[in-house]
Amino acid sequence: MALVDVYILDLLVIGLLLLMVTVGSGWIARLPLSYALIYLFVGIILSPYGLNLVQIRPDANFLERATEIVVLISLFSCGLKMSRPLQYGAWRSTIRLIGLLMPITIFAVAAIAHYVVQLDWGLSILLGAILAPTDPVLASEVQLEDPQDRDELRFGITSEGGLNDALAFPFVYFGIHWIEKDNWREWIHRWIAIDLVWAIFAGIVVGFLVAKAIKWIDKKLERFRTSDDLMEDFVALSAIFITYALAELVYGYGFLAVFVAGIAMRRRRNDEYTENQLHFIERIEKLAEIGTILLLGSMLRFAPMLKFAGDAFVIAFSLIFVIRPLGAWISTIGLKVHPATRWLYGWFGIRGVGSIYYLAYTFGHGLKGYDGEQIAWITFWTIVLSVLLHGVTSTPLMRWYERNVEHNETLEQNPAQHEA
Image 1 (tube, helix red, strand yellow):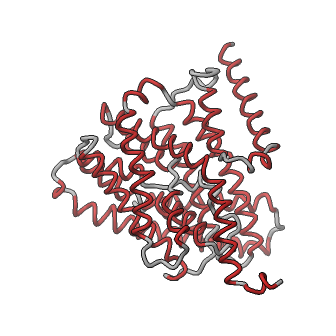
Image 2: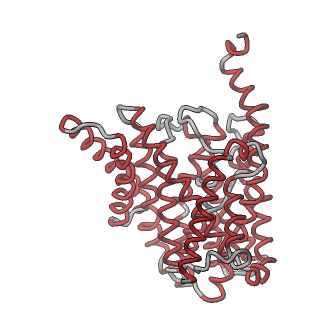
């Protein structure tokens, strides 16, 4: 009976939370708070340190599968928002953030973890890879809302979040291989051939082909069936799952394939159809965000957090205040954007669900014992601090950006608006 009562109370609290964020969305939007920060606090309140309503302690396999679904939905959503042509000039900010900033982040975190926290190199690189992905789920205040928005900051943050969730995987495998065998010469050739070259190539190809195939099938069947908007929305979910499964079956990166599929699905004959799919996926994404951050808040425990607080603060402080800002500035040298945009690239490196997924994944592939506990709580600390800091600053910073940078750039591009 006690279990049933707790379950009923859980449903009541979740229902009240959904009602609060829905009815109060206009009011919340004016506060210097992100929704993720609210969900995190509610999760802590529901934990054993609060009302003790969430009593489960999910194992690594459950956490991996749950966050995997959240990341897949988010990646497809990011892909659907990418309306720019596939040309270097259109994606220059993304190429800088992925090709330069992500490796800088991984190896800078690894260096600090090795020389300051005293982790061995395998664990250090693994930690850098776990913390490398920026979160497209939690960065909603900074993300593209309208795919036709040409703002470089929003496009860069959104596309970066979509790609680095996928492209951190080679470095995760690099760390896992190192943990398994210290002698990197035994596995480096396989890592380059399979985990780097083939997996990325296969992910891109599968994502493109599956999206094209689904679009072709959908078009051919239009003449034989009546349109059903609700069922059409589920085409997006089918595309996510089919793409991911096929990519993984051929040893490609399923995350990358899903992001590419979202981009390819965007380029279809009916923009209204694609917009409906995007709205549908975004609603699922929001619900998934609530569940994941509530779960994270309920999982936090004082004793291990205090035990690893010193190590965690060294890593988190370095990543948030030094590595990401300086790395973003270095990576965007020569990029024709406003200086404030370059600094905001550096600040809006929000960590979240992607890092939880990679952490859970590594627990199923060799990470264990004290090392696993240390990596886990450094990761949780970093996510919590990121949610707190970015949750408080994202709204006022974006308002300042819209007023002082984006508005002025719009007037420069469209002087007729200013004259009007």
